[in-house]
Image (cartoon, rainbow, N blue to C red; front, side, top):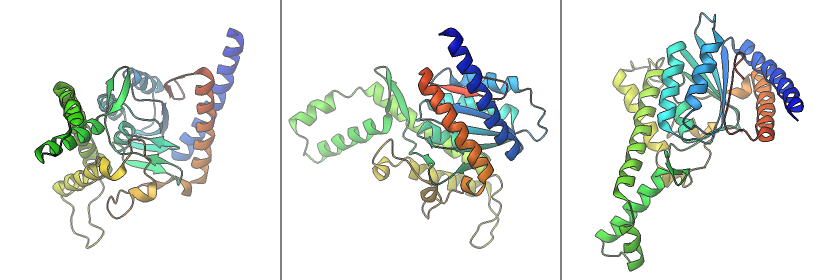
Length: 289
């Protein structure tokens, strides 16, 4: 079995290296794949993958192929700090999904590439509870709903018991997770995604630093409104992200057929391999497997 697994690893690595190399060549930048939930320990793998590249890329550009259901905003913050230590320009490629903390991660890029199938998600932060991640905003919304009913004198006995069972320290943790997610999104959008936004599209007015911050805050507010999205796991399409109330520029991966084809081949290969090996997370570069 060991020799068979070793043989499988070698074949998969050869295919993944080839597809990732095609992405690097087509985009003229280093490439790193990050797949799986964003949990503690992932940031170490990202660091190692970047350091082992020993890149000669004078442009200091990288493409991150990202597929994640979300996870910890704290881990995202550390990965972004690591990536920005080595690279000045970061492009995120979303072949399938980058939800919750994955959306925050993608928003730290200078550009985001999606096609019609790709999805980002609401920035509903997740906190670790009972050995699993749970969406923090759901707790906060329900707590506020019960408080409002109490203020109106409409709280039932059963709801009163539920309200008493809320852990205030835990609720504070949820609030902190929400505030961190929003603050990171605002900071990174203004600093990186909007850095080349110098004139408004409507009348050509000069864009000030405060206008970038205000625009980032508007986007953060919409993406963190779970009463609009209704579900923590609801995907948000490129079309919706570029719509009137979000107006976030997303590059169309479908317009670059060579990159799209290489990304899909890579995604299929790595997804199948991770299912076969029952791997939770996976980070890959041409120098790290």
